Length: 514
View 1 (spheres, rainbow, N blue to C red):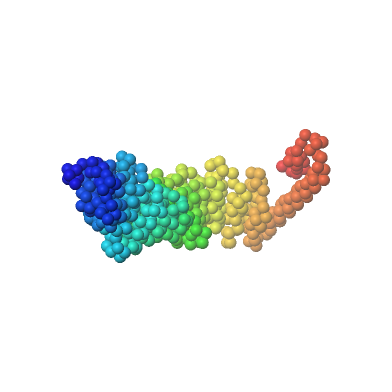
View 2 (view 1 turned 90 degrees about the horizontal axis):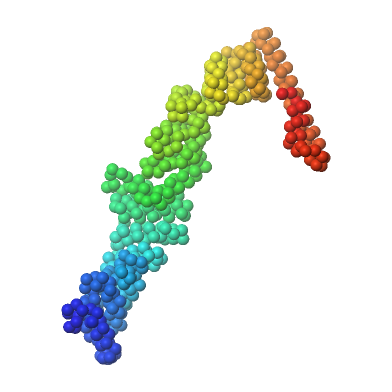
């Protein structure tokens, strides 16, 4: 008692041990006052830097054995002070989680069932956080459950956040994060409000990470939506702060949105796909080029030209800010084609102008073909000719689609021009582009104006069509013959130095006109 009164906890502990060993009996145990005196000496100055944690643990266990009452304040000081920031919850290799757990078990053994807990929620919370940070997720979750369900405590949000964060780091503990969220709700927290504080955002971010690992897209989006409703986050929003709280949360949020958009596009739900895409920049998430293209394609598939144009312009804006890659030419072509189908000529011109400013290019052959189609619908043969000249200036060789579309301008009802249609066929052959049956049928349709001169032109076009058809049939027969010939004579490669492909090429080149 004297050593304890002057704070010599080491000497007091040794004398207490000697007293227990040499003079204490079951009929006459060491008095409670002696235990309390030494325990108070040990507990001073946070268990003397946790160095007195082991003697304190032994005293608490001995007091529990003799069913001595342990003062609440002293019990909580011992448990809390035995946990430090080091590995295993130690403090300079003293104390630790195991010591604290032993104290808790001894203290709880002295309590009657249904009685109020001696230990406070702060003591349990520190133990839970230490377990979580040490990687003991299951043990931390069990203690947390006991706090909420059995002891009816309301732990601070950082306790839930610590456990959830530890569980989210491991693939096998993703479901434990959801359980922690359930305990938080059971403790009285509302998910729609907790994003107002940093620890609440950490808890929600862990939930988003777990949802991505479990591929539970609905849950991930639900948590971000709940965060967006929190007040007190201005000038930012809760969902933005949650999604950008860490690199892991940002990655999980991006993947959740990407997969959800992909599923919406697969279901042809363009409204949902657009909504999710619009949410990504608001949450500081950068959509990949593939995501932009999928949403654009879905809108264009449903002939939503105005929405597709708006998305393309948003994409260009973000690209200008360095938050996305520039849209490729194919994206512009898709939108322009949809505007043409929907009859939105003003939007068509606007998108083409924006493409020219963004990519510093007139586009590719698909772009020119779309422009040709627009002019062909109007019967503007001169405009089509100008487009084709522009293609050649850009170094693009018009294909059969380009020429067929130009021929279509000559077949416009009320503006038929059979002579020009025949001229386009001649120009095709000069450029070594072979007309197909669509080209010939369109050219013949241009001759149906009821004039005698048009009949002669139609006869000439029909003759050329038959010659080309016979040529294709002859070539097809020769190819079939050569295939059978080479198949039947499998030793051909051994008899000469040419392989089958070379033999095919030489024979076909010599047999057919250039």
